[in-house]
Image 1: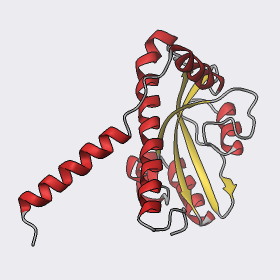
Image 2 (image 1 turned 180 degrees about the horizontal axis):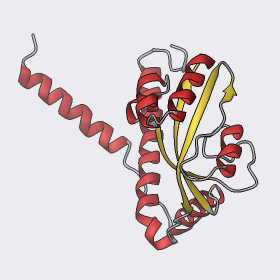
Image 3 (image 1 turned 180 degrees about the vertical axis):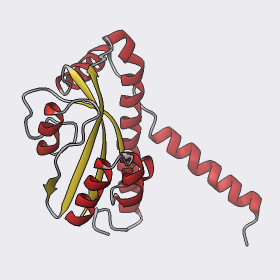
Length: 191
């Protein structure tokens, strides 16, 4: 029978082993600069702050439009009706930026139709409903502004942390796969 002290020693040994195996390597200046350029290539001249209300039923979207026309608050309607994860935040998706003209795959994860509509909207405007697969999306452009792109030196610490975290995640995944393989357990994604 193991004691709490045995369990604590076992956990400490495992944690020490894992820490030794997934120690990240400091990113080089060239790697940081390349990552900075990669990030810049995905940004546009403007940023858009948007909210969305997503629902599979067009009638809910139409009802929200009627309520908005009568003066209802978009954030309150999104909290009440949206089926998106952002519902708890009143549909707030924060600020996004993407290069123009809008191109598929270059919209910071937004569907192309959404990005195109955003570029035509003015701050405070609610757009037309958009059908995306089996759901309807209604969005409000809260604000738009010139993109605030930090220079490399200002971005360096954030990029460094991001690259170190990514390295640790990759090393942890590789370690997990190796341990599972050594233990004779399945290592694929479909387990």
